[in-house]
Length: 429
Image (cartoon, rainbow, N blue to C red; front, side, top):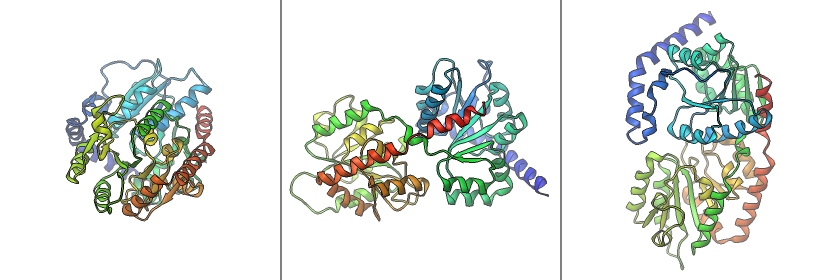
């Protein structure tokens, strides 16, 4: 009965996606009003290209958004080092991922949107590009894509794979649909032993622990140095809420307003939201809190006098996190003070920026626990607690510098995943 149940589950899923296709395209168009790249090449979302593919035999690599694309960059660099003849087809689902991927392209590579997971779109995509290997980054499972790849004999690998307990429970709730997709994966290269165990429980037979690619992402030294130079210009330290999510900015601003008066100027407050579509919303929150703010997008290389005198900065720019980590004395980890699973703190560690994390870090559990054990990060119960500890670190040079050194040591100790994953992938090509 299992094959029949699984086929019926997939058929229902495919039929539902077909019905929802107009709404999917409308949603992309509406989102494109704020982020124009969502309206770019809409036909590719259904695998209509209007031109022949420039060859075949691609190593196809899919990364949903910015974070996965940056991790993919480390893997691509390792693959090129092992075999310079490889040509890469890069696909994405978000505008930030697609934009970041342009910097990864070499002559002969190609870039396109990942098609919607309907049978027709997936078949057109695979027929058009004819990849010889598919690599999905981190958490991607697409039932139709996995089904069609198996029919074509296309090896599919999930690289830098992670699966939380919550995601495993959700997957098992829809086991008739998700288990077959997991079984069809040729190989999963997991970040941790715990991830590997959960991925096996989901149904993938071949799972190897290879580490986390994000340790291998090269920090942009120019941006880091620029942030450090700006910090030297300021007559006060910088306290940052990094990669913040909904609800966190308001909670931090409330705690900031409740701080007692103290002699001397307060640190400069820096907020860097996770999603660019929220920049204006967060700016309005900061201004409503009575803060004189400066927006990073309002200047180029050097902050103007009015920015240096502002109460707070809004980090409303993309792909400049090394600059912000170089600027900040300490970072409060966004996504971890609301039940959202936290954000990746590995880049902060590589930049030598101490991190204060909240209670919710389940999406990056092992990296966070390792950073805590290494002394590169500290756990705080909530944002007011984190704010108080952050203010203390801003004025305690010895404690802050010790955490900074431990952060760099922690980052260096966990590199090497890119080379391991590249060797595993090349064995399948």
